Image 1 (cartoon, rainbow over the protein chains, first blue to last red):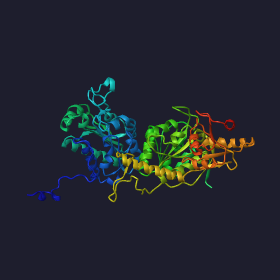
Image 2 (cartoon, rainbow over the protein chains, first blue to last red; image 1 turned 90 degrees about the vertical axis):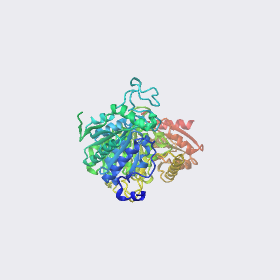
Image 3 (cartoon, one colour; image 1 turned 180 degrees about the vertical axis):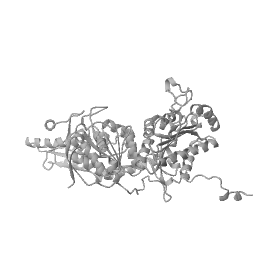
Amino acid sequence: MELKDIIKPENLVYKRTECLTDKVLSYCPGCGHGTAHRLVMETIEELGIQSETIGVASVGCSVLSYDFMDVDMTGAAHGRATAVATGIKRCNPEKYVFTYQGDGDLAAIGTAETIHACNRGENITIIFINNGIYGMTGGQMAPTTLLGMKSSTTPYGRESALMGNPIKITELVAQLPGTYFVTRQSVHTPANVRKAKKAIMKAFDNQKLKKGLSFVEIVSNCNSGWKMTPVTANKWMEDNMFPFYPLGDIKVDGELVKK
Amino acid sequence: MGELKLMKGNEAIAEAAIRAGVDAYFGYPITPQSEIMEYLASEQPEKRTGMVLLQAESEVAAINMVYGAASTGKKAMTSSSSPGISLKMEGISYLAGAELPCLIVNVVRGGPGLGTIQPSQADYFQAVKGGGHGDYRLIVLAPASVQEMADFVGLGFDLAFKYRNPVMILSDGVIGQMMEKVEFGEQQPRRTKFDEPWMLTGKTPDRPHRIVTSLDLEAVQMEKHNLDLQAKYKTIRENEVRFEEIACDDADYIMVAYGSSARICQKTVKLARESGHKLGLLRPITLYPFPSERISQLADKVKGFLSVEMSSGQMVEDVMLAVNGKVKVGHYGRYGGVIHSPEQVLCGFEEFLSK
């Protein structure tokens, strides 16, 4: 059997979603952003809502996500994505609106916007990539940087007395009555990718129900910022990030999940 | 004739916004302009026209909600007063960079810092020179009456959409708080067609996806964007200058004043003429674009200009640039929340004459 006999439509088991553009991703090899992008765009394709979706990119590594995601999008100022999304959704309630934000954007400079959009129960989807570091600006401490973790602005490790503690913004927003679905996922193994996909699908599905805000955190690696190989970064993430940021649903259908 | 009402300037803006078919107002309370959002809330615009009204968690959030709404082609506005406008400046720069139309109302109070809640015109520089970061301009309208507060909402949105540029109504606590007779036009329908190629409406198979952004990491591309912006501002300067002249035909000297200061100076013109001074008044209605050309023409036939502002002298710099040394230029004004009287302006004028 030759290659051309194998490459046939009937043998197709997987293909790249048409809701991603052909532009080459700007992310470092091994980074979780690419997979997260794909999952969001696959979801939009599978729901058939490309023509009804407006996305909001944020400031950070994913600042150019609108170049890769083949939907109408705007770029928000640093931290302001959920306010921008609020403006879009309030004026266009029939549209599907999502933000795609990193930890510095969502949980430091944009904390007020995040909390209040969640508290108002804006009927939007927030995709939150938490890699515990500022990737784009070169590996500085993020609000989610773990204690003891080294970054370019905590070269000897984060100390709580000096630099405060890592913030669990996801658990925080789960307490607000406006959030309907809050979950924490990862995309570092095929099994986790499948779970994350289900969560993102649910988060977009929820917009139809108009019951409130869906918040999907994806704990991701940043091998460049962490100064590790991709494989080591994923292992480090399992050993260090997951114990502090445990994976799983935190709030489902407006009810906190009992642990 | 439209409907006549007796209203505060702030309330007139709110009523005019509903009648102009504005899609959304996002705001945050601050004195002396809170009546705008309060009036809107009491009118239930969602029932009258379907207009969205939302009290945001901050001025920062409010201007970014405007950015979001504007990126989908909606007529969105916000209002605030000086300290709040400073907070909005980041968002205003992004709106200007992304070329999004919107209306921002600044009911100016005395500063700097938390300042005072009394009227002022000390935000002139911030309004007309950019204000936020980067090379950009707002179209700035300066109402001098409650009627103009109402009229400039519709005019502001017309200009904002014509040029895809944020428009600011630069008012102050006097115009915002005083009550006058105001005539309103008929209810205008809200926009239903969103067919311009920059509006985010959802990507359909017949077109590429649309991106609204102020970012371009390529310096040469960003320079091109800046050149396009500058060309637009030049068109605005050539086509949108608005001003009013009072007793300028035979004037030896002309005061330049806008907003509430112009109202005060109208009385000063009368007082001065009773004392034998041939004094006129030029009232810029657009502060950007500034009536530089007209001032330059008048500089060929008058002996001097006095810029009368409730600030330590900001617009006077634009008057000087326009006059370009042809005749003398001075400034008079009380500030920090103090309002000058017509008599004080006359004293200031006589002092200017003696210099």
